[in-house]
Image (cartoon, rainbow, N blue to C red):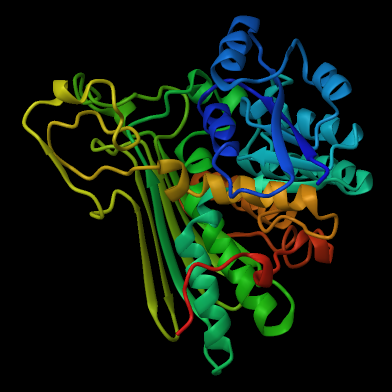
Length: 425
């Protein structure tokens, strides 16, 4: 059997790059396929050297362009600081990279790089213009874009899609109300509290996570019913700085943001007049909170991803656990806690990268979370800041969604290829 090698490039050496590198060693086995971590690039060479040694990466590079030219990757993972997402995506497409895995958010407002200020409505329009440019380059190059929203790839999401598929055969299958939360006590990324590098705070970088599956399920519902995704049409939101305005000492167990929001809430209305409400915040004192709930016309499905009570641990003293992190962002394991073994699986990362590899191996297969997901997510996040600036007023986004950019069939999810998690009776 002739071995096929998938060359993987990684941009960045932080948290996202770390789990990306580890995840490639955990995807389902395929006979005759090798996955090589062929190159890594970082803004600091010493970071790249440490990362390469830690993850057995074949080579380090000074720039993204140089890595593309030398490695010619099959998959390029853009998991660096947010401000580089747009430029790197275009560079990868122009270098004919077959699969581009783009971490969230897809881009940030281009005015940051120019030192400008503007109202949120102008930022929204300019950001969508920029994203149009990026996506046009990707489309023209024929590259496949996987928008790396891991919440879409939860096993529970696959279960909901399976149930929707079956329910629609019986005349049911309407998603009515969705709600979700992503929270912890503040990102450790140095760039997070710098808008020109991160693009925003909790609304932009945390509420985006539960927003992903909410958008995906409406896309799938529409595709199953009549071959056309159901799109969002309006947004109302709040983006607030809570801890910054509290008395000294309040932020002892948190990272207090000075320049970005630490609480974000989005209410999204879809064209069929159904609702999704999602929250992202940096106010969780007990570690990460990843939760998602769906009410349909045939069932309610609640995903308690992290924490859940599948595993329970009691420790009188935390020192006996050494430096083990039993659950992301958990500040102490003393007392009772709920460990999350193999967190990369439960958080969807393995399934996400498995989708990228499947798309690399099959020229006719395209990512489930792709350009459509990235586009609607970016639209809603930027409109969310506009709504917050207007005291929560509803913002119409149809000029970007139902009446806006058109997406090709390959850029729309295919529920039949999403995967299954349930056995059959």
